[in-house]
Structure formats: structure tokens, C-alpha cells
Length: 62
Image 1 (cartoon, rainbow, N blue to C red):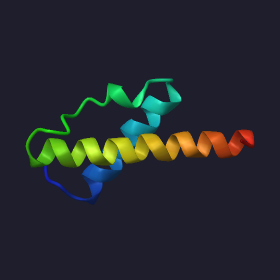
Image 2: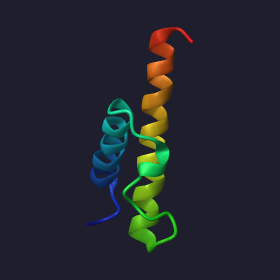
Image 3: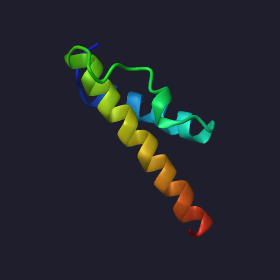
């Protein structure tokens, strides 16, 4: 898979779904210490996860 915008959006959406499902950031399916593609995906997944958490906190008024 290429390291492009489409991949980033797909992986970020995976992070959003994981946060909505109540998973923790440690449940990232990608290796942050792996090769370039895995590092890219781990970074984008965690950013998507964090964005979903912030959105959930903002919607509850915290």
C-alpha cells in the first residue's frame, strides 16, 4: 500500500472507529517501530484515535 492521502484517511478512520468502540491507544494494530509504512500507519492511526477522543470530550462538554 502506498503512503498517500487515501491511505492516511483510511487509517485515521480505523483510529476513529477504535476510539468509538472503547479501545485504548495501545490497541493500535500497526508497529510504531517497524518499517516506514508501519510507522506512517501507526502515527496516522493514533492521530485519528486522539481526534475522536477530543471530539467525544467536546461533545460531552468536558
